[in-house]
Length: 355
Image (tube, rainbow, N blue to C red; front, side):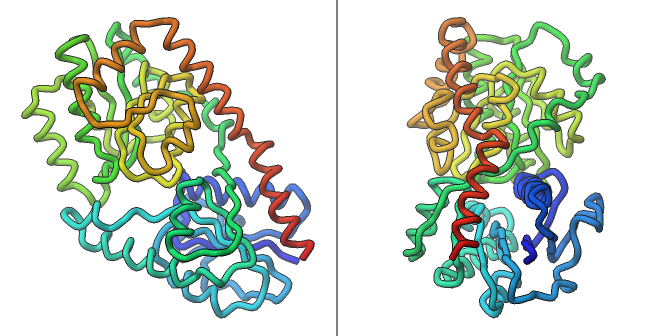
């Protein structure tokens, strides 16, 4: 028996790619024959770990784990295969967020959602990385049992050396606010900027905002953000663009508060990263965010820049409140430990293998 993971685009360092590579290591550690196949493979990923999907020859004894996070010909091909099949649903962003900025991305998301809907009777087991994703599948007509399996997060990587140049550059008495995520419309970086501008104006002029993320195919949105930043008079807003991993570590180590105003997340790994780096979190209660935080951090039920700024200031100036938030975040962080997620994975997989 082989356990085969399939995905459309295996990227280096993103949440789904990390999850797939971590699962591969978990499966091999149990002595199983495991392999990853993808339509696109980042050149930084070893050929020993992943091969082009075109080279995959399925066997009846295979167990296929299909990761779904977008449109793919694999999502249609999977219906033709006669073996045990598991879907891991990572979520697909609704296309309306992208239509104004990138029609190609909007069509890609629309096609992906249509494919997921058409797969509702295809799998022997369905896993979702969050309760929000599970509800998405139910809304698309899935009537089978859906188990929750959080993403495997490479915490050991976060213990690596941070970029010393950045650490030295921003080693001052400024308060640093951070949001990490691709520069895309659903992340709503403009709302982060608006809240930061209010905080800077009304509470702390010696403050700085790190917007850590790459615009990729959303340069128009990125330019709009920069124009908006100037228009509202926000100072010291750093658009990092593409960042190396050691630079990401440095930005986290430098930061005093994580501010997330995103309106669509399937899980939101940066929230867990902020927990790891012991940064208090303020986040808008949308999509998977309340589930990922699960009572930790500080959730906002409305988008009001001045109110958000007041919350930020309260957390940053009240040691008692900040300590309580960080304590709750550390408790929540323990739920995402490798051992707990690995245990869940084998529990679900062994149930399937026993059938």
